[in-house]
Image (cartoon, rainbow, N blue to C red; front, side, top):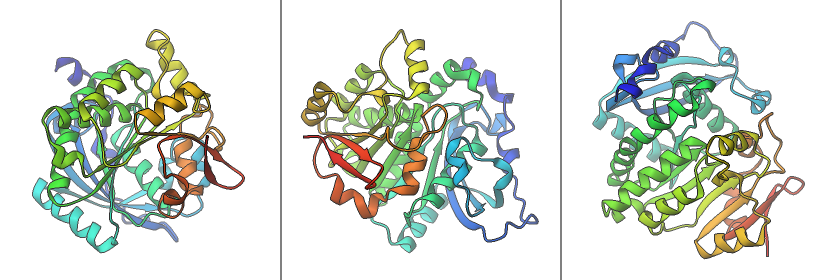
Length: 337
């Protein structure tokens, strides 16, 4: 616990998310992001881990025409927090449910960010994804106590592991309201997502797991760890979706840190052995290498959200377990026979 609390002063956290309604953003899209966080209040909701989950609603103004942001993190000066509300757990859950009913979407999306992501960046990142995609769903963020510093990769790992129970509790709360949840984990957030579902599997919570779809974008985890998670989860009602790119430089660096162990998000979907494993274990391995890349090739899922509609194209493209490759020309996924 001491190790987790050491980076508590590394980032201002909630101070960076102060409302600025006086700074109007012309033609902005206003999005309400509902955030649940395991960041500690003592750290100002920065890099310290808290024993209790806290709940917020942020109304975010996202200016139009920010395609340039797909090349890296959002330019934080372009975003504004119009309103911020800290909410009790029950009130937050009721608000999410009401917003979801109003949106008329059958599935609620929960986004879990990766490492090197402070509170502000995680809120703005989800607002960006929601604005770029054509989903009408309610943006729900689970943000764990990453310090938001690129040099703290190994320090972020225990903070991510610490947060698995908080995410499992959140998923249980949402499922108890009758929600069907698409859990979307990016990078180290994919590890957190898998660990949370593993926890639910070990608890025998089929009532929760049967209401969850899992999407992992460039997941930063060892293949054996993922296999262990899936052994505890057993199965979900739909194939697990994994977005991969063999040329992901960030995951290549991670592999070097972890003694050369290939990361799940860097698997080569065109490899016949990998394809056979995906089919055998009810996985949809989606190679998105053809999507326009950021310098590290690790944020392609954001560009994919701009050009590909999961609601419109997904059911037609993705019908079977196995391996798929994204065709940038047709903007569809092609199943590898």
